Length: 100
Image (cartoon, rainbow, N blue to C red):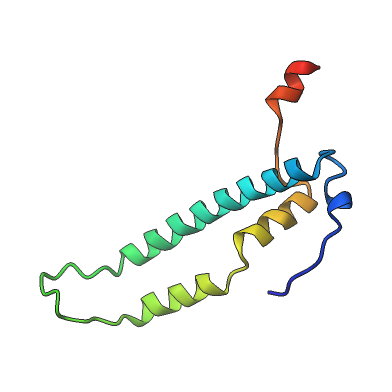
């Protein structure tokens, strides 16, 4: 994936604050990261070696292919930023809602 420079003023127009925008994107990136981690752990769990022989090294091609697939995916912060740009991220600020 390539890096794209974004105009933070334009990116934060809807929220009205650059720091809140970064916080929203960061929280969503963390959620995506947790989801991806759970997904890869679930897939790799099928290949765990339950033998008692610790010295035995077992290299599983499926494990390697799954790991490579997830390594090639875009980083969570890039996915979160794209979701934010496409208005796919729901966010709210309870403090602002309380003051209205």
